[in-house]
Image (tube, rainbow, N blue to C red; front, side, top):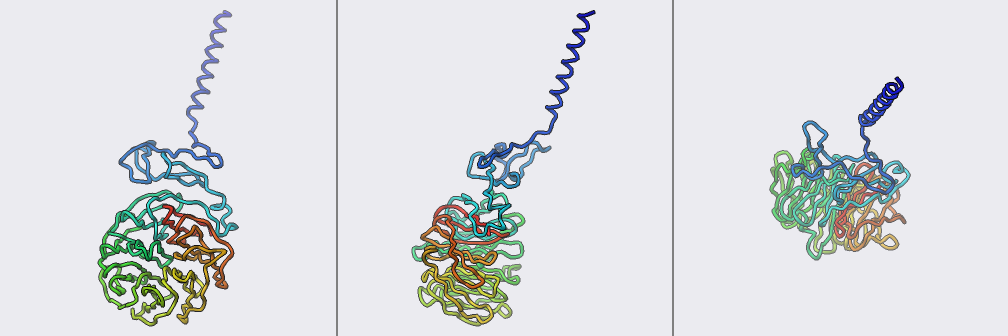
Length: 406
């Protein structure tokens, strides 16, 4: 009897152990808990059928490709293999409101990024090499796609005289409108149309000779044909040119503000002009004399447009009511950015990039004065764009994009 009781107790104990083990195995699995400054691998299975920026989710039934995902407060470092979730610096999320003008991180994109534009949660980066536009998810910082466009989308700025010239809110080489991205292709005399819904090229639009700057306004594209001394006005829906405005001053960049299109003219040196077109009747209304080699233009949301002058190391402010230059802001030491190139506006400041240095300088738009603050980014910073309280800078010399909280 004693032996039977002992065996019964042993069996009962074994059954309890089995139940506990089974309960533990049935608990839902948890994602790795990353520590400060450490990276953990994104769930990924090597599968050549998935596009760039996506992985094969084998947990789905059936398995499917889907974008990489990281927990809140982390971004995807796609330069590692396999991709890693890395913790964002504190300035990018919770402290954003109190951390104005702080560098968050640099995204490695490779190549020679020059023009850049934010639209619908994505960054579109025009590469100086490879005839490619790199698409970056602005939330995860993952490169989601490389899109092939036309020939030499930034060829104007590849020669010795204008190397590194970028763009601002009214960018050189790239514009957004009606859920499309428009890329000027200097070498093939056309514009590539990229749908932001599919991030794929949906068509091309013929232009004049050597198109460079482009802006979208009221359903029309305004394209600076650098080689033809002409501004093409194109119906964006039909792709048909409705008018050509003669511009003998070597038009390069284009920007839009308050019903007017501003054309930056290089003019081979000094003096250079900004030509102003009234979009109501698409006629040239005025040429405004500025300094040497205007490179980029952006609207400051304060009644002024700001133009970077590569040749003078200045930024000029143009009153959008009077259409006159009201201030010349010197970009020199102690906040020297090299030669000022790209410019964009965010939360009361203009952010100015420059070639020949690693600095981005801030201009206070309340009083149009140079801030004592400057930020260190990548080498030869060129294009600048803004979106959702961030500034994004394309660093042509470093193959990266800098993210700045504003």
